[in-house]
Image (cartoon, one colour):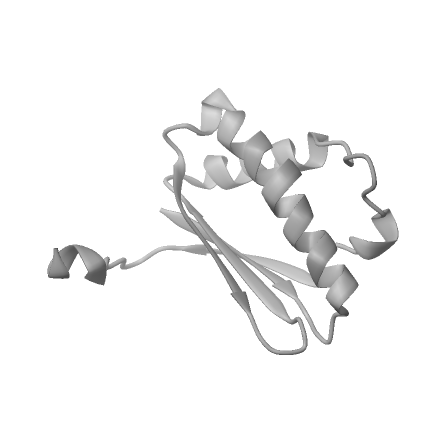
Length: 110
């Protein structure tokens, strides 16, 4: 598996955070989930936020090609009506890691 860690450094205004949430919820996630090539690739997504709006997004796929496909799908999306590109500055940095170990502790409790 491979993980992409995307950093949005803070502070970020409430408007920027809201615009980011909307983009993820209404444009990016639906486009990723609708792509047939990604059906068997997606493992998990975690969005972490600190007070002040700093955010880290960790997406995990089965293969490195899956991460590349997600970037393609995201790049091909068009802004929705009302989305302001000034409120969507993009990440400060993106890093890719091979997943060496993964545990799902919730499965242990089930």
